[in-house]
Length: 137
Image (cartoon, rainbow, N blue to C red; front, side, top):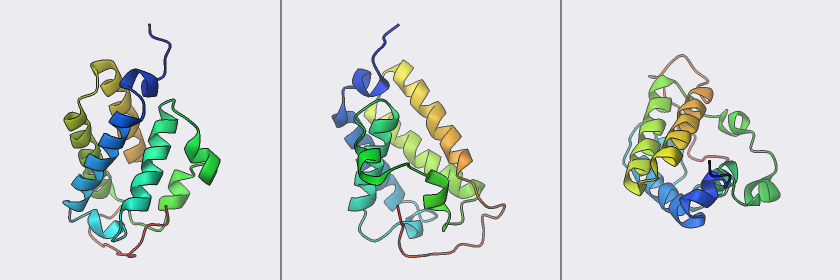
């Protein structure tokens, strides 16, 4: 068994940067999700990149700059039902397909993203959308 982190085994920053770039391209093309994000996606892309690289064993740049992730708290202003969770997960899994991680890495990441997508659900409704115009994350 390889004792290196997923981040190290995947090749460091580059594949995660690509993953985030493709994910956000997918979000931009998803009408259900796009209103939940600010017009300028640059800051969100950077925070997500720092978060997922740290989560998968990379440098602690996210926590060094922002402190504890507090994912549910940061996303609390948004209505996230099953449809939103599924759409987010589809955007991420599609991005993962495009990046093409090794099978063992892919499986671990898919498991994490699926679990996180479900964890973020904070509403029983999918049909009453609130557009806040900006994401505080």
